[in-house]
Length: 324
View (cartoon, rainbow, N blue to C red):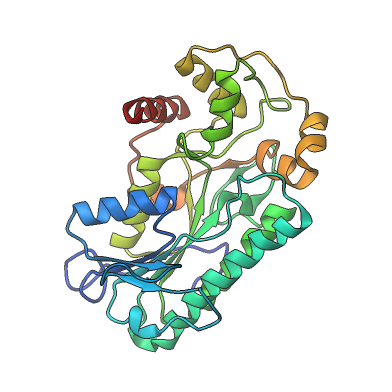
């Protein structure tokens, strides 16, 4: 079983389906979120049977209640599935990160991921694959470095959070093919762009700190395609779900301003961001400098739809306007 920081590609499936063991059924936790909703739609559009874990009474045969109390997840819910995709956790983008909310960020991930991992482990040799959400924040802020899946863990609250989160997923045991989806902020109107759109529309867009810090990023389309690629090609271990080209905070912010026909002038100094948002949030999300590359996806032959952050931003703006 690969540990955090290691990567391997598992042997190709023997049944020729490309979808792993069992019937091809996929169980998704966090299906109501941005990524989960898009993933479920993509799978079902291709005829994949999808079951979801829900935190309410089930409303359909393919829904299964969980986490409403301390009752463990019944392994029978996962038995026979090809894979479980765990995408849950309290919203990283919510502000402020009070001490209580930082505890919630960790507890929500440990509880949900740990519950799924224990149910997977209980199935022993019949365990489905576990694809568990993680984050590019694992690497911390590392100016001047190129960070791939073999790079070491960084420092700070985000790095510590992700390390605990991944450890919970690896509790699925040696029989489970476990994938750690180290996802970059998703370039979407309901993702990393949400607060930036509001500021930019008000004419308050501009550099965050220096603005030249490298920001990991990925489009929603490529996020979903990469998760499905990891599932279908039986990859294992940590996988960086990040766009293929380096982008700075200024690159993303300026592309958004251009797309919305708004100025990009008002700099938010680092000290002001730390004072307003707290050091952990400001340094962990906005000011961190991390050039994270998708080496495992490249090595396995994955091709991106959006190669540059400008294209991802343009696609996000088009999708936003289409929904309006």
